[in-house]
Length: 249
Image 1: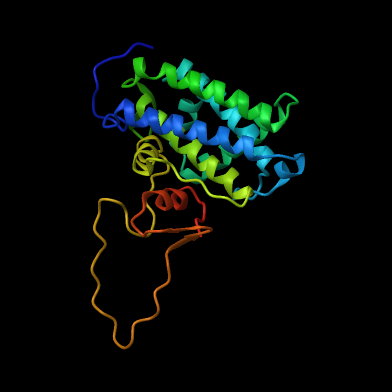
Image 2: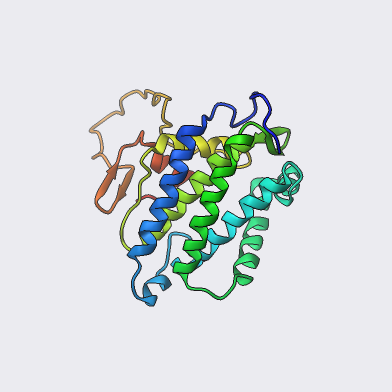
């Protein structure tokens, strides 16, 4: 693939520096979390992904980092592009990707979770080095919307941070990106088939005003609450967590 002049599809507004910084922040966070796992039994801990233990998240990360290389090699005619190009509804796409994830996990070489995450980090960083020269090229399309390599880099960035959060939660800890705005922007650009449109205040958009309710106001209930951290309702990180199907509370 060779770089062309930038144009207007999703991802064209994403600049390489903030996206790649957030990308590396996610990879490094996963490395720190890998070091926090000690005995083998800790890798059997449940994660916010109901069907996956921590060891499964480690294996999935290794698989998906390699998949991103394949998708870039074959873009814009990769198997991922063919899947998205079918225009299937998001639920059908999610089911197909879940089957692919399960098959890839089953085919992984026999290795420890630490080894899987070490391989993930090498693969993810090699992928990041490939991106600047092809940043503005088309990667795939969904229902007529062309998604660029830049947007797919944003989607990968969000995936690393979401799975870092999964691993942290399995340890009873927490994870937060250094630049949650960049991570959310990457998700929105790269996930044309699953936009982050969820209930609640979206960063950059004022909350709608409502007339006061009759009678005494109920006691306020925080929208987001996690161990050792209270999220603001306009915080982009819990917006992304909820958009991806996770519960920050």
